[in-house]
Length: 334
Image 1 (spheres, rainbow, N blue to C red):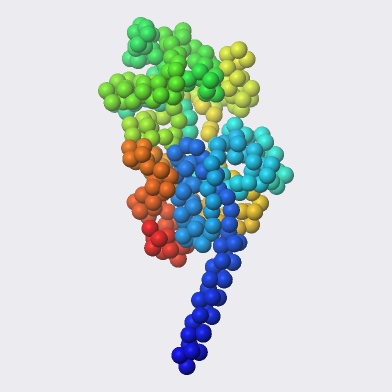
Image 2 (image 1 turned 180 degrees about the horizontal axis):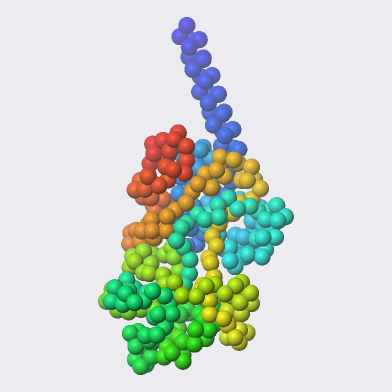
């Protein structure tokens, strides 16, 4: 009887292992680990949940926006880009989707993200009349430039960045020079970060370009300003503003173009219904993402460290992304 019971036990263990292997083999793919903090955090959170919760096998490989898109589009690898900023690949991505090579698993994996013009919290506390960028532009005297204190300083993008051209065009569109402003090139990302950090730590007024999610926006609670005018259309932006002053002679005043971020997958993953359902529900609140980026920077944490911290600290958020049994599996694995 003992031999029979042992045989039955071994059979069921063997059957379970075969079943698990089958499940994993039907959920095995490569995922891009993009080269910026929010993306690497997201990729590692996805990997942990999908492996520990669903029994998938996920290989993280290095990625970057253009390079990852090209290889996904042409070779079908990697099969997932968790955080793809699609503005720079909008036309080829649309074509790839229309032709069935790529699909969107989530049209908004992070909330409250985007680019634009930011001010320090103290700027708004001292000047509650500043409701929009238009209000700020009337008071260049409150943002004295280091190079020429008689003019207001607007901190743009470093030379060579795509956003440098857009900021130059908007500077012209809003007639900022005539209103007493100068466009300051910070020289580098380090220079841009230092300019914002110095102003935020000192409580000084500051107006400049930046983007979210980023650690500095979260760390200093920077405020994104409404431009006070609507977005003036994709033709004005794509064919003029984004081209810079040499091409864009008469730019129209405009709000910043909407930043579009998606989770993109290949047909292989599109057929994995549980994975697609997970991606469709997986949304990181912008405030939480920024707080995690602050944590990762302050602690020099890698993607996996940030992922585990997120899963431990924000259970009430990610538990809504998955079924109860999956949440339990993930919780036990932490």
